[in-house]
Amino acid sequence: MITAYSLRLRLLLGASLALGLTLMIAGFSLYLLFQRYVEQVASQELQNHFIQLAANISIDAQGKVQSGSVLSDPRFQKPYGGLYWQINEETMQSLRSRSLWDYSLAKSTLPDGTVHIIDGPENSHLFALEKHLIFKVTMDVPCPVDVTIAIDRAEIDHTLDDFGLELAMGLALLFAALLATSLIQTVIGLAPLEALRRGVESIMAGKASKLDGKYPSEVEPLAQELNTLIAARENELTRARFRASNLAHGLKTPLTVMSAVADQMADTGNAKLAQEIRDGAEQMRSLVERELARARMASGQAVQLTPLAPIVARMVKALKHTTDNEALLWHSNVPSDAVFPMEAGDLLELVGNLLDNARKWAKSQIYVKFADDTLTIEDDGPGVPENQTEAIQKRGVRLDEKVAGSGLGLGIVRDLCDTYGLDLKLKRSNLGGLSVSVSRKIKP
Image (tube, rainbow, N blue to C red; front, side, top):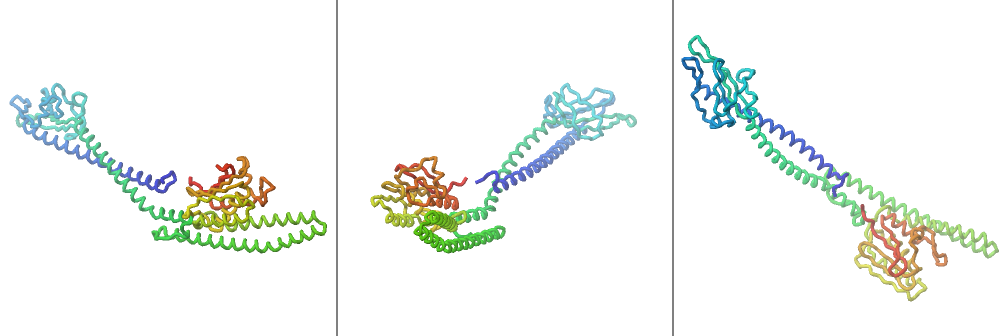
């Protein structure tokens, strides 16, 4: 997926900017070179026409300039045909090509032999070559003559425009081809990072325990560091669970002793003090159970995918023997190949608490199903008002004190869901009671 913060997008934008700038500079340079070439060709054409015209200029006995040449290019004969010549002599009217018709070219003050731009007929601009020649009527009488050959600048401009358009189209196609190549190069170049992302995703989903496979030398150190971090996390989690378990077992005996002492005190007539001791011991036992449950949880994501059907079947079988209502019906629709992204012990705790909660409130039936990666447990009990669904997920909260329990069940379920990044939803069941669903959160 390409987003505003995508590395792929940044590389493509950088490549497109670099390619665009490079091709613009190249195109501008090629256009200037072609313009220079076209102007040189036009200048050479004017030189050739000038030689042909000058070769046919003559001076008669009266000193008048004559030109008996008919230049080969037919544009000289067509009025405003685009090619023009003019011969100026100080003492006589200028001679002009038929293409000039009734228009006279202005004389330039630029140095002799210079190719320059002058005004032409019909508001045109001419690319002109002007030279100064000297003929002799007799050995002692010179006759200066100015000869101008010109071509319409529009013809050069049209050639340049056509070239510029074709050049732009060619460069645009080249840009598209190079950009496509850059896209392919970017996809291939970032493929190891994509493989790394999929590997991390597999670890988060519990499908793998570490990053496997070969990575380029630039990415290999990152993969090794991630594997080291994952191993360190698992070791630390194992040690934390072990310490919490030791703490819980270490406190179990003192708490039992406190309860026994409280019973003895009650027998001797200190019922009030005994009850205070029992309440304190119960609070400590609840706290130990909560922290022990937290210690058994994976810190953040599932480490494996656990088969769900065996755990559901195990818990249903166990709870059937504890319920007082022998007529309670259990319906299970969990595929045999269903898996859930939780560690086995945590999944057993989650399913056990949800089924036990449903057992306490159900009137006649409990329904368990798994579909679309969502585990749903429903009962036909009294249900929970919508404004109290958040409250019952807190530890120690019970809506009905007449029903036995510590109020830790749904609180532990909430902790497990938060730890594993799961979505917990409570709503009215189709059976009339409470429906609890647990599913993986949809990534934004």
